[in-house]
Length: 290
Length: 319
Image 1 (tube, rainbow over the protein chains, first blue to last red):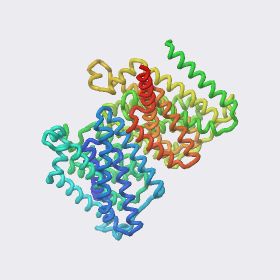
Image 2: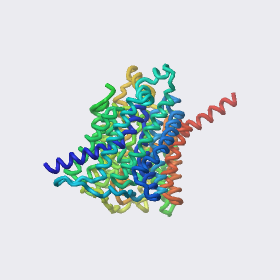
Image 3: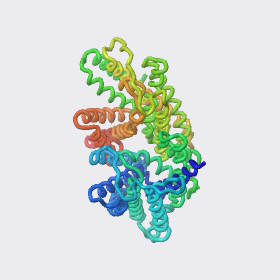
Image 4: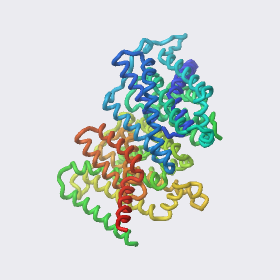
């Protein structure tokens, strides 16, 4: 019973962290319908950016994450423009080649990271990494608590941004009806480009959390394809609070399986859940589409 | 038999004769080592394009089928010491069953959902094999090759010949699929699935058939890899690099005609062999990724598309 309680508490914290790394995909894939298979690769790339700043200049990882955010935003703008010009604009058959395009980008990023940083695992140093907080018998790593707090803040900020600001509402509008937006005199492409920029920018902090929670290696993105897409699809495309709930479900499920069957089964959990959701309820648990 | 069929089978016979002559005349082992990999990728790429090219379903699960082929062979060899031909046949059957299961579960999904589901399947199967002690688990398993059969001098030469047979078989099947009513049906559902269904194309049955055939051939291509490497390990047998390589080869060659993936596999496979030897395997993957992105952006119809465009232009100049 204690083990189960442990698993639920740790799983919830882990789940919030998964929400943080999935939020960007929830915007780019969930709202904009971009088949962004390279999202986890962008995430790992951001982690290596944080690693570089931390390793070279001894900057706190979370601060480093914020520092690279503007850079990532620009990167996102460029990436979407490229995608739009080559696929969305041309229309037909964009699906097949769009996916191949992002898959190729993901592989290029992987190799560039390997060439630059090697295949070894990398981690960051900060005062709160490695310590733990005890409540009774339970031992909660501080790094998970940090991830939890930051992830919760990110989710709240992003949903406020999407529901309260002009640009945020425009992004949700473009997701609902692009044509209508055009008729209102707004440029849907620019709004989508902006949204993709935001989706990439939040990876700065998410990447910092990724490397705070555990060491990263260049091909870590493969495991996170399952986790991020599982969360976003389960959430129902584009719902931020749904993303948080779905991520917590995934986190708890992973932790329980980890406790009961051992770590070697862990990689399959998110993918199995993803497959299950896709097969049974493709519109997600908290979906916007019916 | 039509004239193009006769030409095709003459070509296939010439190809196999050349392969047999190679094994009898060339003493150096290296061409067979390298050539085997290229042939293997031809089978995988052509098999991939049966579903991915004709029907337009981007399958990222190539590595799942390949790995299942490897491990079917490993299991049979360890359990019964079955000969190579039995290993390959069994792998094809397992692959067909897996393709059938995958088809039923995933083919109702479209676009990226199908692709993601096939990645999911890959990781799930990989994790299962990793936890399967009998075939070595995560640590992998060593295999001792049995003695080679005449007329071949070495086992690698025999594997090279076997893979060449698989190439002919795969291309023949893909070619048949392409020119028969099935190819036209798949083409129709690629363009517009709903319209195809409405005009009486049995879309689900066609897709599942394509998935079964494609899966069986990919598994068959994977089976000899166990004996080729004399070693099997889950993380390399199910490596996503296979999926990307095969995807890249098919798209770079062009998927409208069976010759496309063959060209793509020869071109990229040869480049990879040269790069792996001369530079490093990382650069090799980098080149692969860059070429994939470049072709997808600049030449969406692949090499075939470029050739056809050049042909049309020449025809236009003449007129």
